[in-house]
Structure formats: C-alpha cells, structure tokens
Image 1 (cartoon, rainbow, N blue to C red):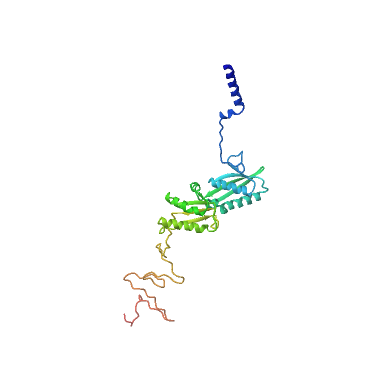
Image 2: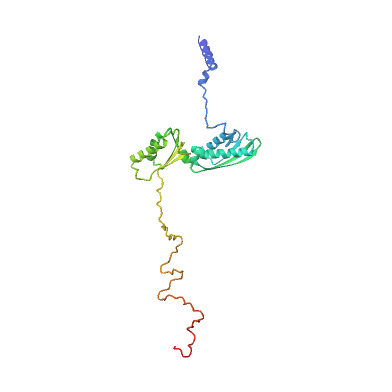
Length: 285
C-alpha cells in the first residue's frame, strides 16, 4: 500500500512539472533603458539617425535635453548636398528659435556634413547658455495656476531662479502670472525689493517655458555728464577757455610778468627806430 502511495506521489509531481507548476520555481528578470530605435543607430554607439526634417529636429532636441555638446548624425534618403544643408539649417533654426527648451538653453548650433556611401554623416556642435544643472532643475506645470505654489516653494528653498515648462497657457496666462507674483510678493513683504524678472520662451504669446529671476541685480543709476571725472565736451562752435587763458590761444603770462603787447603797425614809408641803435646828433638821449 505504501509503495502504491509513493508511486502516486512521484507521478503527481511529474505531472505538475509538465503542466506548469515549474513556473513557481522559475524567476525571470527584465531591464528597461531609455532608447528609441528610430533615432539611434543600432551598430554605432552615440550616433543618431534621421530620414527627414522632423527627425533632425527630434535628434537635436534629444541632444539638448541631455546637454550634449557634440554628436554625430547619419542622414538617410537625402538626394543632394543642398537638400542636406537646407534641412540642417532649418532644423537648427527651428530648435533654437521655436522650441521652448531650445530657446531657453541653446546659444548656437553648428553642423558640417560629409557624403558617405548610402548616407550623409553630420557633425553637430551645440553651445549652451544654461548649465546642465539648470536644465535638470526645470519643473513642469499643467497651467499658470500652479505657478503660485511653485514660486512659494522656490522662495522657501532659497532659490534665486525658477524655470517652469508649461503644459497649458491659455488666453490670460500672462495676467495670471503677474497676479501670482504680486500676491506672493505682498505676502512675503517683498514689495519694496527689486521686481522679479520674467522671461518667456520661445515668445510671450504662447510660451512653453517661463523663467523667473527671483534675485535680479539692482538697476544702475544713470550717470551724470562728466561723472567719470572727464570734462564734458563743449557745444559745437564753442571753445573751452582755461582759467586765465588768452582767448586768442596765447599762453597766459606768468606771475609778475607784464603781458606782452603786439608791436604797432608801421606807417607806409616809415621805418621803426631800433632802441639799441645810437642816437643821432642833436637828439635828446
């Protein structure tokens, strides 16, 4: 009887292993990494690819988001050098002038292309006017109504600037920004301090990113003429005279010395006597 039970147990265990019970004993692992097969070359590490204008724009935005200064692009399906040059120029201008992050962070974009067999290889260089830390500090907001809370948190943390990527702006977005700043400055008793500076990217009509400078430098007072120690220039047609100077341009006489007089003009036919010459007989000495 015992042998039958043990045999049955072995058979049951074998059936479990065959019908899926083995899944309880197995462990699988998976990893996820940010990667897009559409924009990155599979066989060339760090090389981006593009097939049209929008792909180039997306590639450049990927580089900007990573604050990457140099990169290589491979352009496929472009028919000529001119088409490549035009696409690169238009895409770089669009990223820098029409996208929020590009307008906020990018100083310049340069590209140079070389034709290869089957594609064009492009060397990209990007200059930034924002640091990697500034890009990483950009926060997101669904609408301008969230700016009050974000600004209050920035003040509590002692931040001097705040950059917010906007999901929605609306018709009165600028008004709501001003109202949020005015309310917060009044509550924090900051109305007498230097006003905050607000910058909109790429433009103020419908910005995708708003930057607040919470500790801007105080405006410099306008200097008075001659404030730097230099004499202000005289008006046109006038000449400045030194104290004691001669209006005709001659030098001023020294102390104790009589001013020199110009000799009187001679009359026609009359010779001027020389003081050092001997007197004529009969003339008083």
